Length: 92
Image (tube, rainbow, N blue to C red; front, side, top):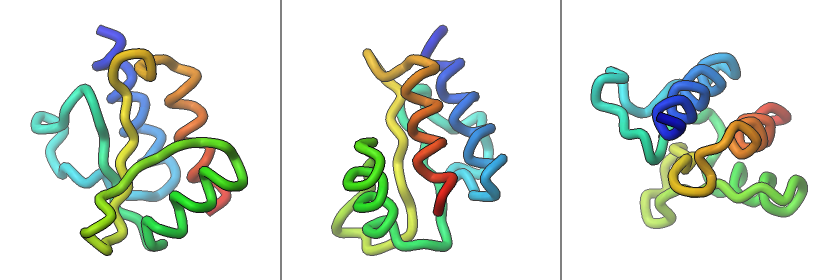
């Protein structure tokens, strides 16, 4: 239940920031991770979030694309982690 709630909150947060969820149809999204397309390189986003905000996000390093992943599984399926992840994207 909390994984689904975390997924939904992450998707809504991503949309509120004007980013595009990577999965176009939420029916096919997973309760463990949400990807989002960004106009900024994922490398810059990850560096900024980690170095300036102490927030860990992820991306596929070999992809060299502008897609970031926000995990919300296990311990991180909590409102606080979803809020921190979305907030880390706000200044970008």
